[in-house]
Length: 550
Image 1 (cartoon, rainbow, N blue to C red):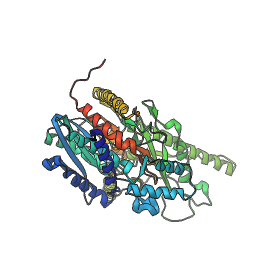
Image 2 (cartoon, rainbow, N blue to C red):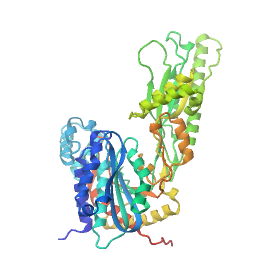
Image 3 (cartoon, rainbow, N blue to C red):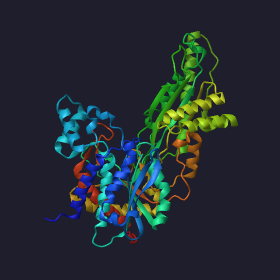
Image 4 (tube, rainbow, N blue to C red):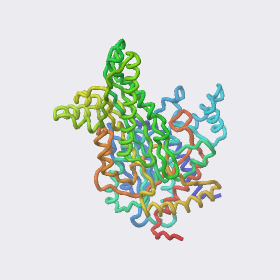
């Protein structure tokens, strides 16, 4: 019996997913730098790229050795082009413990995890993982879900496009980028290079499909989805400066820990600070780091405390976040000082002098520095720019700036400690976005019917993703606020002028527990439905026929 094009794509997607997972590519490792060459060599063996080697190329991204994006252009007719994009870097394999040697070998790893789980008591999450593995529908492997199976679906769609009997309308540009798990440097360098690529090959890029993975803890209804947007992320920090005092005389100073505790209490998981838009609600902010910035032990109250938060957004912009954060932190600072004064008054048995605090944004702090201090701060920032821990880098720069400015506590400096991921949504693309959604709705219905399943739209991809930098030009005003209040330029997005803009969505695999030991992909949807959905979506978006509305 002759294999259909859909069946061929499914078989190829499965084989490619397993093969690419066996090529380790942990973010920041030498393996990440070599992955694009493995993939280039693999695609170079196909007849099309043997005939057209200039359409298979790499784009420099970052690092030493240089980490690169792999690009493969499949030509049909005309200039209309869709970009299929996904990242190939993965998080660490350390959480596999004794099974780390199998972390990138999906089938043996799945068997080993089942054996381990069967051999000991299990919690609820482990019971679910074991049931999933025993069903035969889920396969484990570091990066298989997040997101080499998404890349494989894109390649399978690309190959199907190239084997159509008649040259199809339009072109597909497939790209595999590094570094999504760190700073999206791969996608941002691709974004910057796309205008030149479009000119070089005479392409009109009309749409993009990101191929990243999603999670569903139920029957897959949340994973079988086309995402119309991706969540925004801010990383506000509060650098708290106290007035240290010996522990025997606590009211002679102000503990930075007291102020920090009130800030955490006012911010962490506070529902009122969550965003709601597009009919969905973002999680409230959470504290990612809270530490006393001291190198040794002494019997004095803490003079400096660093706090960093993760704040996901559906609508707030940089100015909103900075202003809202300032209000919360100012209130917490005042509350902490008033409480301490009240304690002091009760301890003394009489009135005390009111303690005053100072609030500054990082931009306001830097404005207090003179030229020689600014030069020293710039030298420090440059020396730290190669660090991969944005919070550590930012903390050291803010501490140095506060010392240069001679800031005395109690005081709090606020700003942004890491790269901002902009909120993006198809509605930002106007008519082009509405046309894209209409065409995708028809494709989703047809594909779901063909495979006997369901596929739905979801508004916001819940995890930060490369979509934030894919097809979108940064807002100049937003970029200015972020740059002025982010201590390290290495963790800002310095986008050049002339970037392309086109509507994008996310269509990817689904599974459970990504980044965790039990990370697993749902094989039937990911290998059978997804490549077909991506291919049909690409064809529909490449169609140059004008959209008709009832």
